[in-house]
Each structure stands twice: as C-alpha cells, then as structure tokens.
Length: 345
Length: 288
Image (tube, rainbow over all chains, first blue to last red; front, side, top):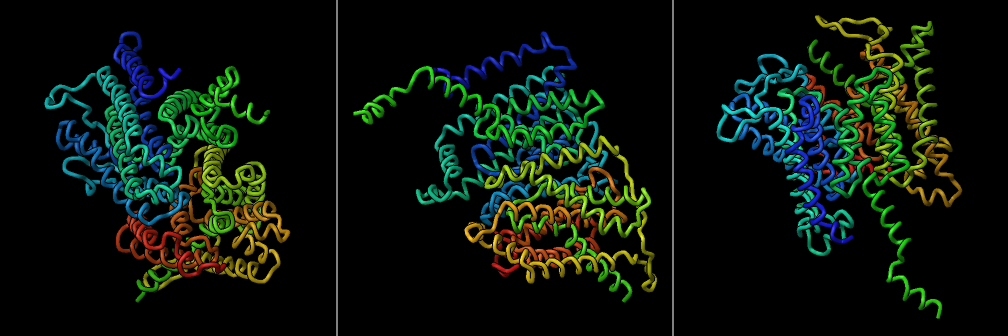
C-alpha cells in the first residue's frame, strides 16, 4: 500500500497519463482533441487555485484575474512579437508582478480570510469592467487592439521555440497542453514535499505557531500567492493557444465561480482533486450547453450548495477517508492493541 | 458655477447610491461577520419584483417601497432557514453557499424571464441647473438613503430589538448566556438585510437595466464599501460610503466611470493595508 503513496504513485500515474496524452490523437478525433485541450488548460488553472487555497490557505475568489491577465499578456505579446516563446514568458511574468503588488497590500495588511476572498473577487469584477471598456483605436498596445467587449481575435498560437514559422498543429498543441498539465502537477508535488511546502502547510495549520517557530508567514504566503499567479497566468496562455482568441468574459464571475467549484468538489488539500473536479465540471458544462432546458449557472450553483452542505471536504479526500476507514476496520491498527490491553488490566 | 453644482449633485448621488446598495450587505456583515455573495442577486430580485408589480398595474411607489423589500426579506428568511443556519461557525463555507445561491438565482431567473432587459420609467421629472439638466430622482435617492440611515439608527439605538442586536454584535456568547437566542437574531438579521437589499433593488429599477445578471454591476462597489467600512453597521457604512463615493465620483468626472471604479478600488486596497479591519475597526470601535 505504501508503494503507491507519495511521489512514487504520482510518478507512475503521471507516466501513464503522459502516454495516454501522447497517444490520444491516434484514437480520438480532432473535435474531441480540441475539447480535451481546453479542459487541460482549465485544469492548470484549477491546480493553481488548489495549490494556494488547499496548501497555502489563501482564500482567493478571483484566481481568474491572473488567468485573464496571463491570457491578455500572451495575446498582446504574441501579436506584437509574432513569436510565442517570449509571449508565454510575459504571460507568466505579468500576473506574478500583479500578484506581488496585490498580495503585498492584502497579506502584509494582515486582513482576514473573508476580506481576502471578497477583495480578490472584486479585482476580477473590476478587471472585467476595465477590459470591457477598452473598445476603439485609443486602446491598443503596439499593434494589438484590446477590442473591448469583442475581445482579440486571430491571436498567433504556439510555435516551435526559436522558429516562428513553424506553428504547432492542433494535435501538437494538445500534447503541449497535456504535458504542461502533468509538468505543473509534478512540479507542485515536488514543491509541496520540499521544506518550503512543509512551511506553508504549517502556516496554513497554525499561523501563530509557525511565526513563533521563526518563519515569517507573510513572506511565505506572498510567495505562495505569486506562484499561484504564475501558474494561472501560464494557464491563460494555454487557453489562448487553444482558441486563438481572448475576450473579457474570462474575467467574468462565471469562471471565478467555476474555478472555486472545481476545487470544492475535487477537494481542498489535494492536487489531483482540483484536476478531477475541473475535468468533471467542464464535461458537465459542455453537456448542459448542448441542451436548452437547464441554465448552466443554475446547475453549477446547486452543485456548489450541495457540496458545501453535504461533502464539504470534496471528492478526493472523502474517498481517501472512506478507503482508510475501510482498511482500519478490516485490519485493526496494531497500535490499538496495547492501549486496549492496558485498559483491561 | 453650474458645473460645480452638477458635480456636487453627482457626488451626493454617488454617496447615496453606495449607502443604498451596501446597506443590506453591511447589516449582515456587521451582525454575522459573513459577506453575502448573493447580495447582487437580492438587489436583482428587488428590481424584478418592482418591474413585475408595476407591469401588473401596481402603483410604482408602493412596488418600490413595500413590495420589493417585503418580497426579498421573505426570500432572505427562507434562505437563512434552509441554507445559512447549517453553516454557523463556518464563515468561509457560508460565503461559498451564498455564492452557490447567487448562481442558482441568476440561473433560475434566466430560465423564467429570459436574458432580456425589462424596466420601468423613472417616476419623477427633471430640473434645470443653468445649462444642465438633472433628474429629480437623484435627490430622491439621497433622501431615501438618509431616511434609511435614520431608521437604522433609531431602531438600533432606541428599541429593544436594537439593544439585542447590539449585544449580539458585541459578544454573541455573552448575549446567549443572558437568554438571547442567537439563531433567532441571525434569522431576523438575514431577513432585514435582504429586505434592505430588496429596497435598494427596487429603487434602482427605474435607473438601471433590469436583467438577471444586473447584480454583478453593483456588487464590486458594495463589497469595497463594506470591507472598507468594517463591521460597524452605521458608522462604517456612512464613513466608507462618504469617502469612496467622493473618490469615485471625482475620479469618474475626471476620467471615465470605469476608471473611476478602478481608482476607487486602488484607494480601498491602500486603505485596507493601513486599516486592516476597515475604517470603523480603527475609529468607531464598538459603536453602532
């Protein structure tokens, strides 16, 4: 059982997933490959939120701010440079700078969870209004017109690094997105297993105690928040690469709510949970979009309420607890025996 | 001179509308320490109640000032009984539940009424300031905001219900040992907060496009105001509305309304860095 725990399990699972991703174009048609690509890009966003919320204990209701900033940074840079490699770098850098500024004011201000959630949500609402209002020739950066509500169409997609003439095919873009998802997942696993990861978990569990042990919670939280911003920005670039298009709706409330729901139903405090939650919900939203009777907001809201009330831990931790409870029942822990014996004598 | 009067009127109306759209949220936050993320949808329900009543032939004043708050207040009580009361002591979960509720209300309203704009015409005429035209509805909104604040003050300061509410605000545990039932107080709080949101929605119906997603247009400002004001219901709300309404309107006058909102937000984030518990956490601690 311990063989499948920890890093070994993650590595084996990732290797299997990587093989599945690389061979998928052989047996899945192009339409579904495109569908899976956007699912994987969103799963990277889910990982970023799962990391800062589940491990860093930072309640960020507006993770889509960084996602959207990354997407817009990529689009503007790709149009200006005509090469995707520096654009991807900017899609990570700009959200990190923004996260550093915003995080400094919030985390060093020492505000409560409730305030932090509300402020991050407000950021995404305001970015939505701001980008929405950028219609017209006045709002352009270099050759890139921001386009207001209509968004920016015809964004160059990923090319081979150093060779702007070689644009990746949809199948190759899928492989890049899928492998990126696995890389981010493994990277976060390594980070969480490192001493930095242990410190941020300690801070999540008890901020005062961690501070008394000599760790400044503020700087660790700020770095966690920035890492989350970087990953979300990268996810934004992957998203634009999928559709060659970006519009202000990626800042809208709907996506912020969805990203929270992915983490809630998947489970806080795991990394696989948010990915699974994201894939399930994306599939569900696509299915709902295909029919007319039910509004997708209605279904998403109902799912959120049901999970908060009935399965507050989320799917992955609940299943893990059930499995552990089952193991404990089938085979009583050896540690229990001496205690009971002592009581009896 | 005329332009100064018009800008002054804008500032007054900005402050008044901040007070109106944030009051219900501030009451719930001050008493229960949770932010109701379905606040925008309560505003929207108030606006819909008004529009539908008016189109059914009800007098517009009655629809705005009575039907909207009563209807949304009842919705609030039902929500508290069916949802919020299971989540006492779990602040974050109760916020998430209200977010789910907001999606359900938006989705439900869209399914019933469709994603189209409905509206009522503004009941009051306009008046002339030099070369500028302004609506009489603006001073009316300011009057309503003032009236609402006076009522809140009167109830909190001079009635038994207000005394109990202040006791629960200061120390829920102590209030409970003295025989107050906190669950009852929270139910009433949520209902009254929702009713105030419904009133604001009703008052906004003539000047805003009424759509299922209209709440999102107001909640950013309402959140900033309540977070900036802190947990003291009256002084937090008034001081934050005054400060932010002034900044917002002046910035909007100098740039565009959207940049006005951005500048408002930046001001609020700087304020939060200096006063992490809001204006009232620093200056009006323990007051209403």
